[in-house]
Image 1 (cartoon, helix red, strand yellow):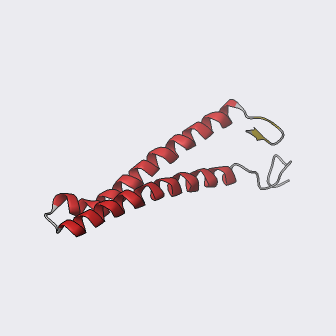
Image 2: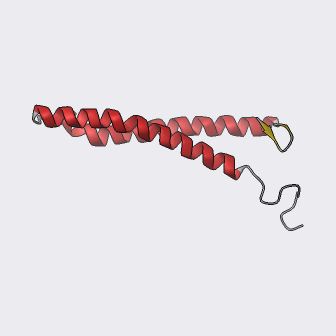
Image 3: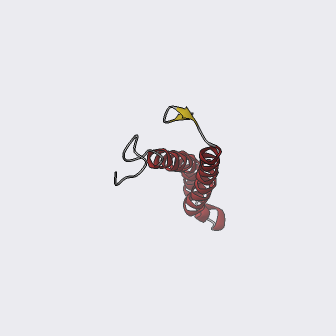
Length: 94
């Protein structure tokens, strides 16, 4: 919640809000695409019941995992990028 010993600025709060929104939207998109790729054939074609059921269950199991993994990876990358390379210095060349 606090950055560098003080409260976050409005710009930092806005950047975090945008990054959270991006993480959620991109994760939902990735999960939907993966679900469509795995379970799509079961929904589009007349497959044997066991294969159709397996593809649907696999899609429903993998999509939430991809969603969570994408959200975590985007937010961790954002947090790591927010830290300066030289703490306490305002100019990287100083």
